[in-house]
Length: 285
Ligand code: ZN
Image (cartoon, rainbow, N blue to C red; front, side, top):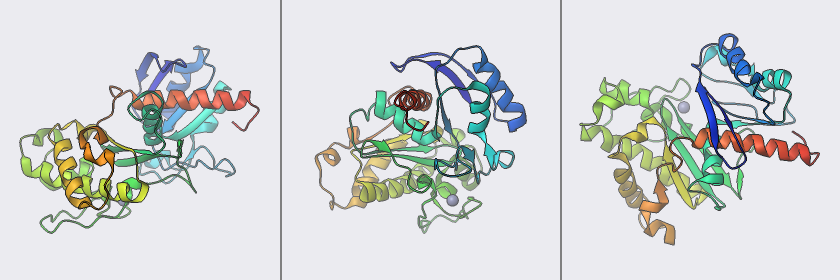
């Protein structure tokens, strides 16, 4: 977990990283970091699923996470009680989307998506200039995708087996090929298959949401050979059906994050800024 202090210009002034252990161990460390910093607001971009419905009794809780000690944990309650500042809360990947929409490559856009591919797959969606929530928040990393005929890997999502995350996240790559993704850089077949699944998901997101930009981040995307393969496959899968100015320029349409891997923490900063503005306006915080 990364804690940082920043300002309304999006500048990160200082930061620390704290390993995610149990809430009993980790949360006091986070509270201690912020205790004497005189912050005016706090934004939290949290791994999910989380409860984002302000009318819900469990608003601000982490809910059905696979990290068992964090399941049904009232994370916002802890910070509210101890720091007493306006608090903004969203998923980590919606946070990254917001960072890019505020200070990065999605600035000024109405509709965009941010996909992270790492230990899991997550999708943050900006629609109509706002982060999309709905009844909870989108879980686009768990969309169901057909396993390719030449792939025998059973998938490792505990909920769905061969969903997107179960087939394409870092642990799935390791499970399928027997080595960590970072050790497989020189194996083209690994990245051809990975690009297939990511392109499959991206194509579906494009058809469903009509995003003006698609951002792909996370540890797996550090493999430089992936992005050109994904762009090519998305073009093939769309089959010429959707014709827009954006799709003619795939290099600037389907992109890596633009904020030096600060997009998540900068998005959290914006969540805090927005919470403070809402409180200033007398709105619900
Ligand atoms: Zn799943």
